[in-house]
Amino acid sequence: MKPDALSRRTFVQSMAIAAAGVAAEPVFAAAPELASLTLKQASELLRKKAASPVELTRACLERIETYNPKLNAYITVSGDSALASAREMEAELRKGKWRGPLHGVPIALKDNIDTAGTLTTAASELFKDRVPSEDADVVRRLKRAGAVLLGKLNLHEFAYGITSDTSYFGPVRNPWSLDRVAGGSSGGSAAAIAADLCFASLGTDTAGSVRIPSAFCGTVGFKPTYGRVSLRGVIPLSWSLDHVGPICKTVEDAALVLGVIAGYDPLDPTSVNQPVPDYVRALTTKTSALRLGVPRSPFFDGLDAEIAKAVEAAIDVLRKMTRSMTESQLPPTGSMASIIGAEAYAYHSKWIVESPERYQAATRERLIRTADGKAAAYANALRQTSLLRREISTAFSQVDVLITPTMARPPEVLGPGTSTPPIGVRNTQPFNVLGLPTISIPCGFTSSGLPIGLQLSGAPFAESTVLALAHAYERETDWHTRSPPLRAD
Image 1 (cartoon, rainbow, N blue to C red):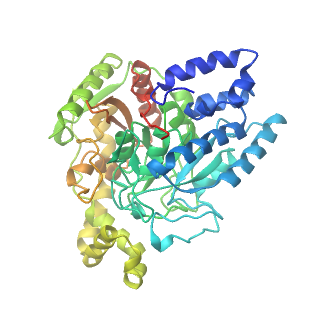
Image 2 (tube, rainbow, N blue to C red):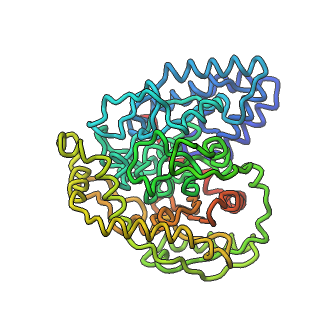
Image 3 (cartoon, rainbow, N blue to C red):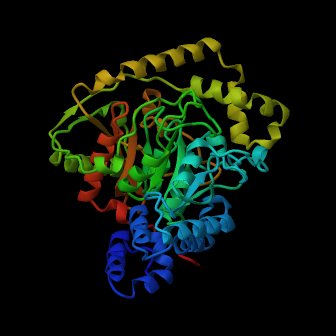
């Protein structure tokens, strides 16, 4: 049994050696450490028949049983249905049928993404018994690709916050330090990946909710261009700003998942009919011709000293693998509060009046505060957002990728004082307003062992460029290989 703090890279190398030998299958069949593999590595083992979907699923379920009581990452664990699906995928593999890289790989979903016949609660008492009759579009795509769905992940109630401490099912805890927030709103999605409780997860991102928990938990979180991934079947926070994206262990894993969930959905009014490139092939693109921009203000203002040091070190690495790096500037995007407030209240208006007591206090107060929102402020903010998204391509005439810190501060301590400070979304929310593809990748740790995230952003629908640079950085560093020091006791 490997120590929990052993790096994934060291473990994977030893497992690869075992897979090459005659005794490979028995080694994997008995190894709960299977859950430590990346999605890509697990997928390759399945194709080689060095592991089975059932073994991978059982390995994840064992990890969930051991560590979820500490982390509270899952709301619903679908063990029986996951094993049934794994057996089905295993039978297909035996017959030579392979649906693609997600075939037989266990993943999990943020619990605001509809799953037919399975609870979808949005972490709220209001929806604690809600069972959708249809899958969200992204779930249909995952099932078609052969993914095994392990269950539903905890979040900040109705995705309305960035700490994941406000949930009817209790707070999500950070795997790197159980007394810290995991970030939000997709806190369970990031915590589950960091703790090897699944091979990939989906989150939603309205003001940073994929990237914030990824920065806090040391995972890769990717928010694609607005309209690239369907929102149909996702409980909304703000229709104009919501995105769905993968949270994974590596950039390559994120590319694999994005390739499955991306695509035009004619039944979703936010969906854009753009061809979906081969994101995995794009990872091999040379980065030597890329022009980098560093928008210092406001993204670097008031940074924690250790975050500032780690990000500058990451910029030095990126400078050596690209053509140029210049100071740049993004147009001011203003506050999204009027958009989120108005659209969140529009969705909740009936329930917040009829059953206010079924919301967590913090969520209830935020919704009630928005009830008297000004129509003019909402309309003006929505028009400004439309104009910014139309004009933002001009900001990429001199640069290809923008580099910023994901967060200005490390994750805070859980407790009654846990808050959502304005600086918390300062570095992430502009990219929701602009609708740009943006990724958070690990770039270091604080002296107390808390992860630090680096944010890369590209032009509209330039997911391939962002992924290529993030992957190149990942190859030059080892931050993504580190695992939190969890203990079973």
